[in-house]
Figure 1 (cartoon, helix red, strand yellow):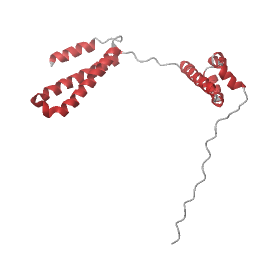
Figure 2 (figure 1 turned 135 degrees about the vertical axis):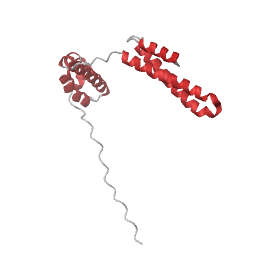
Figure 3 (figure 1 turned 90 degrees about the horizontal axis):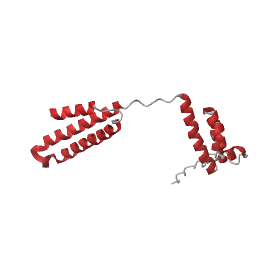
Figure 4 (figure 1 turned 90 degrees about the vertical axis):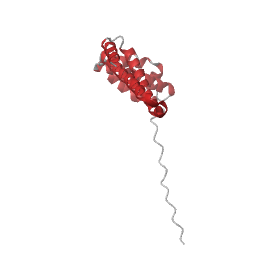
Length: 167
């Protein structure tokens, strides 16, 4: 047991950021395999006999090493860089432009008209150089509105319950 603990400690201490994704994958596989082995052993304990305790200890150790390896890999990765407000706005302008392009090709120009001011507010340069250069989007924005946002379906008149028959 000491040899396993020492091996795990040395392996975890040597985890570098370059190895972190592989360590996380290995940790996931080991911990899930250990838990799966524990579940199977609990179902088959009456058939295994006196060796069930050693098998449970083995799968428990495997699962614990897997959790430790995953944690070491996760902690070895640098935190994700936070995007600035300008980067976030540029990303949303791109996303909305992609959506508007699809809506324009589907003929849903009323949606394109709704997206247009949002893209302009997020990133004026993107609006000018990308959004307004898409021919389908421009066609939707320059043509007279033939279709507005669809109205919700009219509610059916409430049905009156039948009166009970007079007896």
